[in-house]
Image 1 (cartoon, one colour):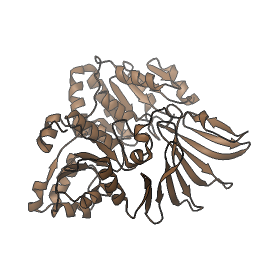
Image 2 (cartoon, one colour):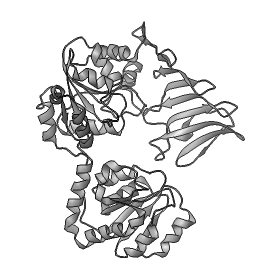
Image 3 (cartoon, one colour):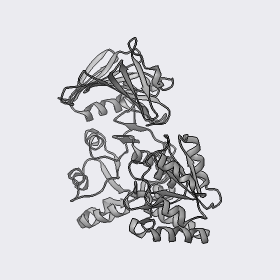
Image 4 (cartoon, rainbow, N blue to C red):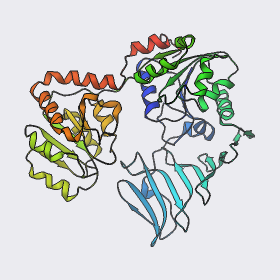
Length: 445
């Protein structure tokens, strides 16, 4: 049994966590390796390059090897490489804007176009390089071992992959053929494959010779109709496949589209989350932002004098934000550290998602995990998955936002009800739901 994911994104992480919490501890394989997969997740690139058994730590931005006289100019968001006045490269951090650890470097030509990308892994090695033509199209990616020797060459134009393994050379014309070869060489048991994509993981299941019992965890919306590959699953095949939809609204929409004979193949199963223990209720709210455009912030500060509002940014604050210090119920934190942001999440009972522009530190998801009541405006909300519908307001009805906060302040016992509505919005499940849908955990898991 294995998990097979295209990407190890938030959705895959949530599913992996849910399975682990329910007791399923079979291997997890990811097809697109960004170099920073968790220790309990592997990939064909880790396996064939030998980095599956490597040790080390990520490379700090100023440890990038450069020609003499070149320099690095860094901020908390990214770094840039210059040869005097000419920009030569952009350094991207992992995770974005936290610890200045190198994930990738975009190298530029004389016209400022990205011509190749070097990727670094969590062991500090350059493990991959992608070349790009003048039109910005990817040509090929080479994957290297610790000695810098090319092990895998992926041609993005033809789709071919060339592999050097145990002194032999292999060529694969499709990604799923390469993955199938890897799964065999790595010795995985393929009696059950859990996957969350109808791309390469789905096509891989069609290549497996032996019979099995698979599960597609559907984590995407249903737009105009049932996706073609899903229709193929519903028609049946060599391997029995169940479809578990992880969003209740999507499940209901899919049910309405299904013919009666297919409905038994589809069911609903939500997600489990790593909720943190919350301290006692406090009349304090948090707002994480790198923008000084905060919807109705002064109205809220004036109308809620009994509520302390903490505003934190990972950068310096503008004079506009700093001027809010004139309100006695505001606390400002320019250049906040991740540790301090986590402390604020732990000690506040509300999160205000009212900043325009991009979200920082995955703030809404973090507030959800720390079990804060999240309130937002409909023109600033960053992630609707974790905000109860009754906690999202129009700026024209800021009075309703204020009334909602005042109600919780006057009746803290209602906070639990608000949190439960958030959890319902996020399709929260229990371990027992997983065991009911998947089957009891065995020793093999």
